[in-house]
Length: 88
Image: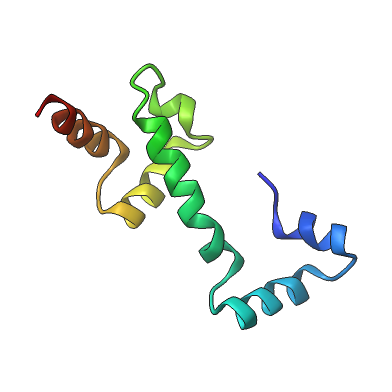
């Protein structure tokens, strides 16, 4: 994954300046802009039952905490809920 430093380097500006400018213009941090896309991708990957959570997440424990914070469900519970929805 790219970091704010990578984008700042491409633009030849300081990472803090880029981060502050994004927050000022968008009303949220760079992470706040990117997290919905990461969550969308995580949900797509979790719907593939052939992939384990360990295979999906770079750091499974961190991913589980983040996913629960974003969705109020653990990845395992999310899978169980989506599996129940496909049965119905």
